[in-house]
Image (cartoon, rainbow, N blue to C red):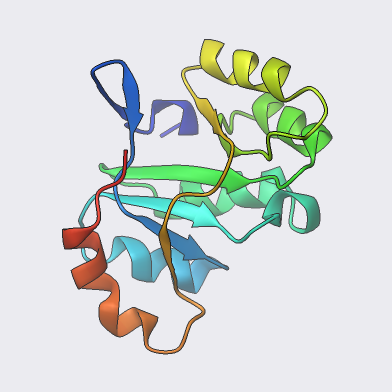
Length: 144
C-alpha cells in the first residue's frame, strides 16, 4: 500500500498520531508492528540526512499494516525534506529554523501529510530494555 494512504486521524482539525517508536532498521520496524497496535514509526533523529528518504520509504513499506503511521526526522535538512515529499513520504519532523520550513509544511499539507517542528515523545528501540516496554508504551501513550 502506498505511504500516502497510511492512516493519520484528524481530531478537531488537528493531527493525531498513535504512540511513537523510534526504529533504526528492519528488525526494529518488525518489532514495533508485531503487537498489531496502532503505532507511529519514527526514524532516528536526523535519519533523513544519513540514511535517506528512499531507505525510509522502503523500510515502512516492508512492515506497513493498518494502524501504522510513519514519521521521518529530517532535522534541519530542508532539501532532504523536499526529497522525501517527492518520493511520497509526507509526514516529517523538520526543525522550525530550517530554511523554507513553511514551504515544506505547505507542500506536505497538500499531500495529506504534515511537518512537525519537533519529534513527539517516543520509545527508542535502541535503548536497553525498550523491547520489554513496547506493549505498555503502545497501550498508554497516544500523542496528538
